[in-house]
Amino acid sequence: MKKSVAIIGAGTMGTGITQVFLQAGFKALLLDIDPGILKKAEKRIADIYSLLVEKEKISLKDRDSYLINLNTSTSLEILKDIPLVIETAKEDLKIKKKLLKKIEDIVPYNTIITSNTSSFSINELASGLKKPGRFIGLHFFNPPPLLPLVEVIMGEKTLKEVKDKITGLLKSIDREPVEVKDSPGFIVNRLLLPYINRAVDLLSEAAASRDDIDKAMRLGANHPMGPLELADHIGLDICLDIMENLYRDLDDTGYKPSDLLKKMVSSGKLGKKTGEGFYKYK
Ligand code: NAD
Image (cartoon, rainbow, N blue to C red):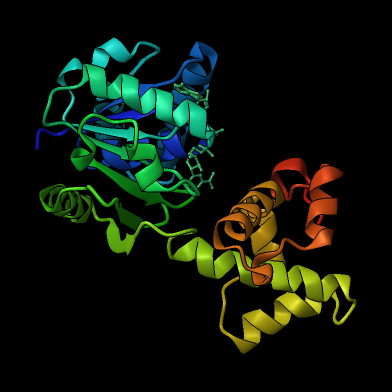
């Protein structure tokens, strides 16, 4: 596989995944429909590298070589010669399906097309494609440069050679792939979100205080963060979205989102990103 990749969607995940590939020596093409977002993403990446130079984590030469390898565009036409595409656009089924079809019509026949979706079925996303065999789910974690795990999700029609190429590539760039069948929440979200949701239920029942719930899981289960701190870090809106998807797809009341979680999201308390969730942030 040639060392170049296109990342479509320059939000939180697209920007972080781009950094991972730049640091692994790839040429990265970052696309978005919004030129303003692309500018911001470019600046964010350049600022992070300048900070890493200041902290002596990378050299000036490294920073310059990463930035030379970064190109941005609002036009999909630029994908004509790209061997690997990672779709990281907004989590909206219609947008993703339409975008994937357009990508398929432009890229060469042997390009691998992937999606970083957190909640949609890979089979559903592949259903509009002419060649679903080359499509596979690649679920990175936030922030991608710091969290090495990538869930690799095979659709029913994904070719084994595509999965083998992708897992080989991920290992070569110091990522840690795990394989999972196309199933709601994949591995991490299926296990993690119900746990967070139960912690919110405990809090709303006043069974224990916020601080004691977090302390209990830090000290009793050796978790680096308690569940309520973790929910604030992920974003309470994202937690609620994932719980709603799990509840719908698994049709099991055990996955019903907590009323307190819903209340906090509707009052705009989304966690760190809005300055308040279960905790307050400056
Ligand atoms: P985001 O909202 O920060 O960014 C999405 C970007 O997609 C925006 O910049 C938007 O302009 C762009 N976009 C929308 N339509 C587009 C189109 N047609 N073509 C090109 N760009 C388009 O979202 P995010 O948090 O970076 O999430 C992106 C994907 O990654 C989602 O599928 C999400 O479920 C998944 N994901 C998110 C996280 C997380 O913690 N944020 C973790 C793992 C996976």
